[in-house]
Image (cartoon, rainbow, N blue to C red; front, side, top):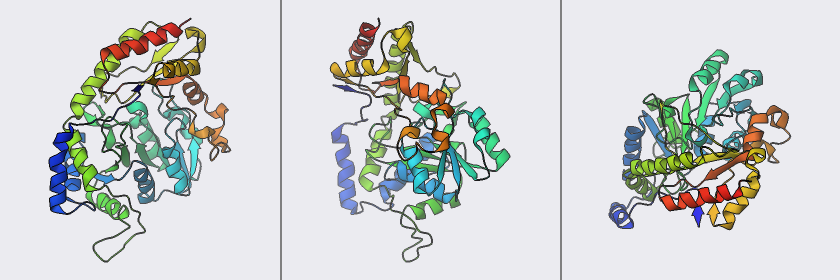
Length: 368
C-alpha cells in the first residue's frame, strides 16, 4: 500500500531518552521544558519572531480570529481543508468565498475587492500545497480597506520567498503539525505572531485564559501542546531537511515523467521560493487524457495506491455552507474546475524510485 503522505518517523530508539527525561522531570504538560525548547527551535528554523504551540492545527485558526477581534464577514477560499472555514463559523462569523488562481490554487487577489462589504473585517487566505499566496497584493487590499489578514499556513512549514519566511506575512499565520504534514508532532499546530505582547495574550487564551496562578483575564480554551509531542517535535526537527530533500527528488521524478503527457498538468516552482514539497497535485483533463479523474483515482486504489482528491469536494459545497450566496459554482468557476480535476500523488520521503515508476506506469496505462 502506498499513501499520499507518510509521517516523518525518526528512529524509535532516539526517542527513548526524551521519554525518560520527561518521566524524571515529572512535568508532562502546560508549558514544560520541551514545549519551551520546541518554541525556541521553531522560531530559529522558521525565521519567525514568536510562535505559540497548540494541540492541533484547528484551534490556532479559532484563536487567531478571537485575538484579532474579527467580526462580521471573513473573505476566504473554498479550495482548502474544511477546518479553514469551520474556524470562521465557530467564531460566529460569516465566510465569504472568493475564487482562486488556476496556477497556484490560492485565493485570487483580483477577486477580493468585489467581495468586500461593510461587514468585512478580515481575509483568511491559504497557502495551498505550500504555494505562497500573493501576499503583497493581499496586504495592499487589506490596508486599503482596514482589514486584518490571517494566513492558514498549514501546508507551508519552512516555505520562504526571497529568503523570507512567508509565515511573517499578514497579522498572523497558523500552522498544522498533523501526522500527514512534512513536519509533524503527531498532532499539533501553532500561531506565528510578530510581537511579544500578542504571544503572551495568545498563550493565555490557549490555557483557559489564566494569567498567573489565580487570575483569569480572558475566556480561553484548552489548546496546549503536551511535553511528549513537544519532545517528538524537537527530534523530528533534526530530520526535516533530509525529508524535504527526499520529497523534492520524488517531485522531480514525477515532473520529468509526466511532463509530456497530454491531459496532465502540474504546478510549477518559482525560482524565488523555497518549497517544502508537502504535496504533488496533478490536474486531469478528461478530454485530453482520455479518462476521467475519478476513474484514474479508483484505478490507483486498485493497485494499492491511495492518492487523494485534495481538495474535493469544495468547502462551499458542504451542507453548512452551500446556501451562502458566495458558495455558488458560478462565483467559483476556477475552484470548481480544480476540485473536479485534482489528484495528489504520493510524495512522502519514504517513497522509492521504483514505486514512483509504478505510479507513473498506471497513469500511462489509463491514457487512451
